[in-house]
Image (tube, rainbow, N blue to C red; front, side, top):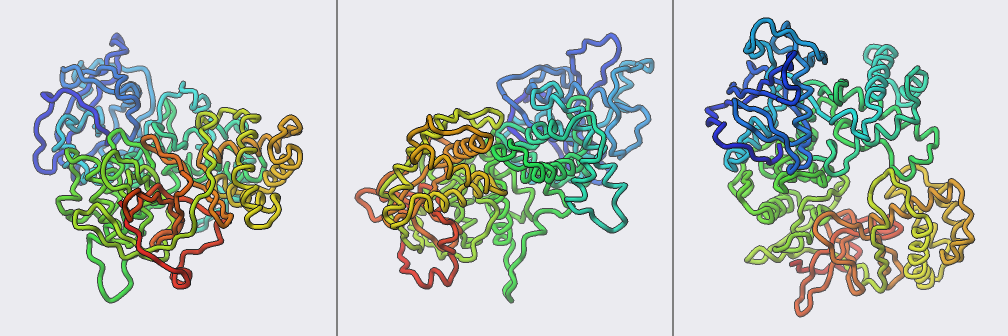
Length: 632
């Protein structure tokens, strides 16, 4: 559910368990093709309701077109306008109530029964921009807890990915064809009660006769499941909308239709083929795995997968809610929302959602920083975890540095320790226990070398120049401080850095990095580099590393990686910053001493190399000297 405002006077108050639904007039011969007409209705949200729920992204809210809603001009974003344009071509006079199949796409209609006859057979749709009064903050706040029921009780959730003439969907027809053919082949090959292995599924896909090669499918699938901000799988509300659906959501790309499970099956099978086939582009664009919400649909509501306490004392509902929400934030923070409040509110429907105290109740009138503050304290008090430091801290214009914007996640991993946290009387200072690991004596901060467009080739010479700077500023001094060879430090750093950022096999990258190190004297003599596919892949991997973070060197020669964060302009890491290990976290945390006080500001998470050199367990902390840190 996004935030967008249409005319207030169209809406009548909802009563009881009512929701609004909309019917869209089909296109009839002689109609103005660009005129879209719709009507609003009130229906009870119960088992008798028969409606499709549209799941989509708004797009640019400043780019709108007008529809007629109950006879009034009503603005909708361009992406929704095109969804409605194609929805009106999906009608069947003979559709039976609660039939979850989308009607077939057609462009011919017979209106011999009269202009208003369409109302009797047009299906109902629930579309947030139209069915919620977006001008009414109170109504929007009340609708947040109902989103799970709306999408969970819909006859079918229908995902609109966009027009099939978008550049990223230029092969939409062939991709849908491949998804359907692959699904059919897998179902035929399965024995009752058994599941095929991923290798078996990959072989089935390779044996299919398709109108597009598997190599040509890689880019369309990566772009389809991309979590880039503004794209479908990068939005926070779309996650909930498909996860709570009671049936495999339908997927529409222009006039083409398939299902989310079929696309996801194709994605998984092609991912195995890519790994086995050694496509070079795979190394810089990342795996097809882990992109989007489709992989999470296993029929189990997400909140049921969170373990409850295992002692004699039963966990209370609010603490259980905090555990559930923490797991969701850890995995899914970072998805985009038009309204920042929805980074939090958009995940509530995936929890068991008990009765919430006032300060946690959805309220779009409450300042976002205040919402983040209350939810941060609740998460820490419920779990004892401090991985909120990975959720985008120090990004608010006002308030404590430890309060995140929930613009990032921690990858879904969970600490094995907890921290007993106390707060100052005014609630601004958080006091935690931890271990100081070292102080930064050198920093390598490389600005983004290019846009984050995964399709754009990086400038290799500029990347290697940055690599040379990293060697001279961080890696060579680390080797000197540890009395080791530069090659051994580079290999140790790269083996962990490449795996962390890219995943998968990195042997070729490590070999190429060693060759580059030998040929260009630590990265200085770039003209001597012999460019091959492997060295180019290595340069591309380095480019991605530099975009994702900066490096620090501690006084004992330890190398740290500090990831860049989303949000307002960050402060750069500085010499004198300290790296700590806190109970309740898996990673390390970068702090900055506050002049004239005994406190620190939280700069965000960081990682030391090798990553395995510190395992933050109770046993490890027991052997360290812990101190208290006052975080403001």
